[in-house]
Length: 341
Ligand code: ADP
Ligand code: MG
Image (tube, rainbow, N blue to C red; front, side, top):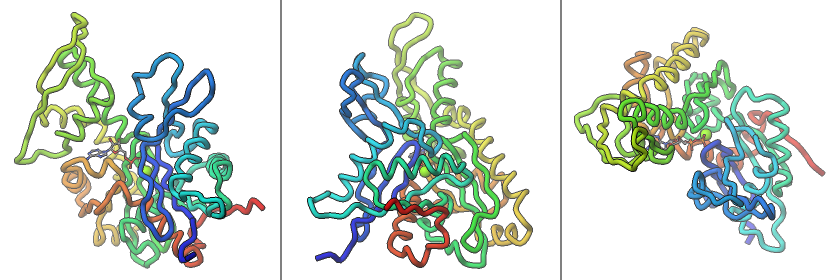
């Protein structure tokens, strides 16, 4: 009966929370958004349902992202969100013990930030919390032998930040985090369309444009899409057609910032590790890795081979799952461990 524990691996992302349940795999995959009734303090929705309320809530409702750049920005809301998600993940019956939880945190967060992630998880019902640096989890989830002698470069492009990390022998040798990722790509599309067409679109529309026709590198299948917005000159709704080449123009500047971060990290990488990266290539993870042609652009700009992880959105959570299922084996990778009893 008790073949598996109810332990959980958690990717606490700025855009999405994914939870891996021991023996079951990924059981939660939800936007990290909470909607609350301001008057009663009651949580109305968590995840996708709450996300649909962003930007269109009535006066008494607030929908928000409780995490910023992979760390807790609103403690109470993070706890409430995790509570709901842990419940879904463990399908808590009367007798199930509280879960042990492996959570990823961006590399280079402060001790205070680590502490706030631990506290939020414990308040949300974790019995014990283990933290793993996100690039290590991403590398593991992408199937890299992160403990082997050969070094790797992992680039995780999420919603709030892009993390670049050189990994060798189970540790992070060099890393860099920039606040330039999916959300800023969306913003760049909003700004481009406002400047060029005097048309104001929402962030969700911008994200849809990015997903539908966005690209980082020209391809044979160029496409276009009709979008709706509000004309800033006469204030009325208006439709325009935008092409993938225009979206690429809009994304050029923010993408160059991500590439700059990769180049700087490569420059600071010890020569032995650089030599490995030339062989092993750069591994892309995170939702941003799904942008069409990003691998080609990074390859052209760095000269390194570039591989997109098979399931870039799932890598970190899969990595925490791998750790969860071999806790003893990976113990030395966990940066912090807390017993609360
Ligand atoms: P986080 O770890 O910060 O929660 P994720 O790794 O879940 O972030 O990635 C979320 C980001 O990935 C969002 O900005 C989203 O727009 C972007 N994204 C998801 N799918 C695609 C895609 N197919 N093309 C481009 N960007 C994508
Ligand atoms: Mg992430």
